[in-house]
View: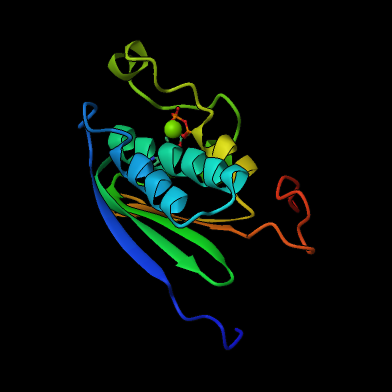
Length: 157
Ligand SMILES: Nc1ncnc2c1ncn2[C@@H]1O[C@H](COP(=O)(O)OP(=O)(O)O)[C@@H](O)[C@H]1O
Ligand SMILES: [Mg+2]
């Protein structure tokens, strides 16, 4: 890419499947890190929401995983990688309201099927790859608000 791709921050947060009391901790650490770095608040909000949804998906749907935050001169990158059952049909999983969350998870208020659609709305770049019974990787990219991306709100779909 450019000569300015030197990574400034690279942090990893483990996420445990089924651990609802700890769910959201990785996203909240990502948010705090971005706030400390003085990242634009709207961008920080979008990264935090997307990270929270990806973290919840590991907690709800996978065995364990990790979230990596990379803050580069060209943007912010979040990678949520897990070991678990995987996603058999990614386009179906992207549909608003589609969820395979079990009843006990819905009773806790999760499993509305809006996580992946929400990630898609928040991130400028989204790449999901999954292998059945191996795991899933959700890679997200966020650009800084610049002349190229004035408001930081619209994105190509
Ligand atoms: N990390 C994951 N591992 C396995 N399946 C997943 C993962 N993330 C999402 N899914 C599948 O995609 C569906 C839609 O995800 P999402 O939009 O976040 O809704 P929800 O989490 O509320 O079910 C999930 O119900 C699940 O079937
Ligand atoms: Mg979800």
